[in-house]
Length: 302
Ligand code: HPA
Image 1 (cartoon, helix red, strand yellow):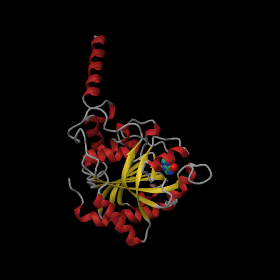
Image 2 (cartoon, helix red, strand yellow):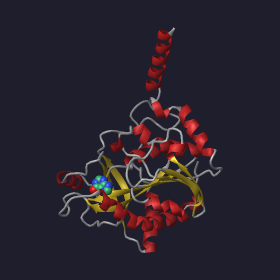
Image 3 (spheres, rainbow, N blue to C red):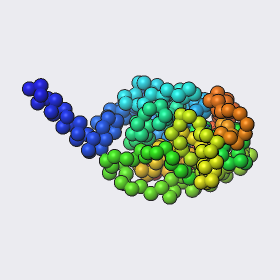
Image 4 (tube, rainbow, N blue to C red):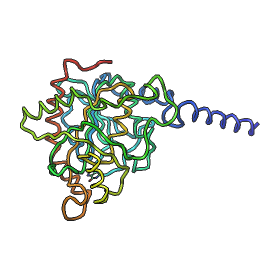
C-alpha cells in the first residue's frame, strides 16, 4: 500500500515536471496566491511597479494603500537582500490603481527563475497590463554618474539562464516570445518627455544582466562596454522577459548607483549603492508619477 502511494507521488511529480514545472508554477498555487491577495483588497491594479534596492521608500507615495508582507502571501518568494522591504503595496498613484512590489528576489539569493518571476505571473493574472521595473545599476557608460537615472531601451542577458526554460504554459504566452520591443518604445518616449519637463537627467541605455552576487571585474565591465552595454545589474531581465511573455508593456528605469568596476579607482561597496539609491528615490518617483499621468487615459489594456 505504502509502495503504491509512493509510486503515485512519483508519477504526480514526474507529471508536474513534464507539464509545466514543479513547485511554484502550477495553476492551483497561482489561484491560492490570487485568492489570498484579493481577500486583502478590492482594488484591481492595472500597473505593476517593482521597486529595486534602496528605492523602497517610493512606496510611501501610494495612496489608499493596503500593504501585505510577502510572508503573508502563499508561495510569494521572501526577500533576503538588504535594502528590500518585502511587502506588496496595493493602492493608487496619480489616480491609477497600482500594485507595488517593495522589494524583489534575485537569482543570486538562490531562487529559481520560476520563483523570481512568480510575482510577475501573479500580477499578470490580476490584470496588470503595464510593468514599471526599477533597479540599482552600475554605470558602464562613461558619461553616466552615480545618482543619474537611465531608462532601459534594451538588454543583454548574461545570467546564463532564462525564466521561460521548461514546459510552456500557453495560457500565459507563446513558446517563443518576441523581444524586439521588450521595452515599449512609446513608454520610453513618454518617460523621456516627463524627465525633460521636470528637468531631470534621464539617459537611455542598454542593461546587461549578470547573476551576481559578486560585482563584475574590471575586465567584465570592459567586455560589457565593448558589447554595447551602458548599465550592469543583477535583476530586472527575468521579470521583463516574463512580463513580455504575458503581453505586458514594460518601462524599466535604472538608477546609476555607482561607477561600474574599474571605471574609477577603488572598491565597490553595497552600502554606497544603497546611499546613492536613497538619494535618487525622489527623482525616480517623480518620473514614475509623471509617466502614470501620461498613460492614465490608456491604462488597462486587459
Ligand atoms: N554591478 C552589478 N549590479 C549592481 C551594480 C554594479 O556595479 N551596482 C548596483 N547594482
